[in-house]
Image (tube, rainbow, N blue to C red; front, side, top):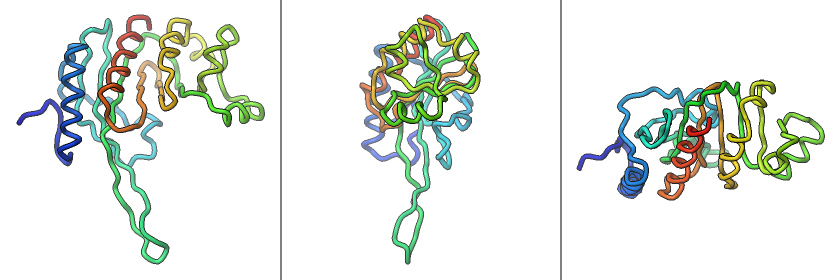
Length: 208
């Protein structure tokens, strides 16, 4: 059977989940296979601990106003195993769903995730987070790290923050490099998660 994604190295259960996810996305967003595009995933900090990142499938979301994509990604990480007397290394991998969007504004480098109690404590000592005085709800919900405060503050307008606020999920991670945004959960593939991510980037491209 021919699948619209790379099945090399995948077990039967993973292939079935990817196939189910693809069919659901296609029915709701009219996604189309992109062919070979280098999204430069290795540039993103979310994959910094990976020994390699394999793109198993990429699809353009046709219902969006500007370019945005849905990705099946297989990150590989090397983990220690065994005991002190017989140490070893394991190559661990799992397929994940991520979505990517090209934005009109230049954000610099931005990292966004739900804020934790630990973040609030650190912020009291090292004020490294970008807060929005006019949007306390957003600042209380998300932890925002930036490299260029002026760029990020100008680009993260009310429309952007409203779309992000709808993604209230404890595991969501958003990273932006200049005009390119990637969002995911860092969890195994799930059809429901895929719909959330695709909907997010499609709506984001309608406003940003």
